[in-house]
Amino acid sequence: PELSSLNDVEVVNRVVEVKRREKLIGWFKNEIEKEVKTAAQQTEDFSEQIFLLLVAFEVSNAARLAINTSNPYLSVLISLLGSNDPSVKFSATKQIEEWKKNAVLQTIPKGILKIYYLLKGDVLTTDPIVKLSEGLSWKARLGLSLYYGDSNQSIATLLSNFVATNPADIPYEDETFYNILKLFVHKHNDQYNIGNIISALKLSKNLDVRFQWYIYEVLVRSTEQLNFKRSEEFGDQLTLLFAEQLQAAELWEEALFVLAHLHNDHAAEYYTTQLLTTKIEAFNKDDTLLDRLRDGLHIPETLLFEANALYYR
Image 1 (cartoon, one colour):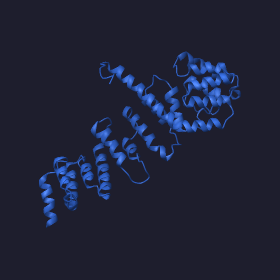
Image 2: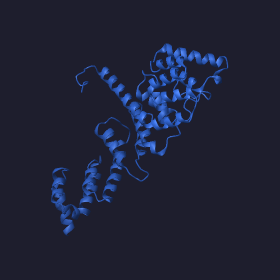
Image 3: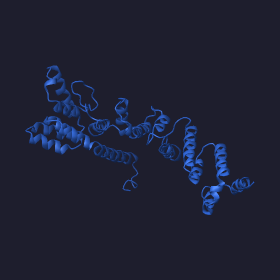
Image 4: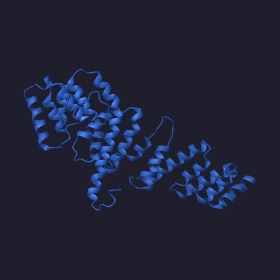
């Protein structure tokens, strides 16, 4: 509401971007809490424990642990995280290069080395020595990118960079979340096949197109936030599949409502007529239902009369 009175579009978009990032990081924090606690309990390395606190976005607790374990210099480094200061990134980069030059990189405690890479901004590093993301889930790794990555980059860019790494460890139960993030990337960069992404959005292993249909109707058809070639044909396929499932559950009114969303007018007329003429007996059992069909869904009264006539004949 506070933004509605602002006329500066850039300011509004920036504030919305910041709020979205905060909300997304908050979600990741809840998702990885158990994972991080378990990992912290399994190591006695203080530097690794400090790093894991940073993974959980608990910067103040990480700094406190650094002080309590007689690592005040590490506490100072931690306070610089997230500053996005070019001089901090430069200093961290130079320090890492110096360690490599003197061939002492492998002697540096892993936790400290990982913190330097966070300071450098190289959150998605694949350096085999650092192994920054080793043992971390995809949610934890992506959370690191959003929290410690370049704050000047948009969420879409950070997500796109992460997706480009082709993470192979996405568990089945997380595929829906991951594909929703890819949809957000597609909104700003159409490098991914949106039809394939929506088709992969399944909330269960059984055939269930409800979620796919909702996503399509909200993002593609209704608000036109996303566009892609042959979207109408794709949408009609989803609509027919969803209507078929509703009819199998004997949800006749809901099936008619869904069929009303068909782009193809001829198909809409054919399938609506077919459903009415074959199930008119079920519709006749509820007088208020017929009224809703006529007044709510705007089913032509002549079509209802015709369906009844065919039934009685």
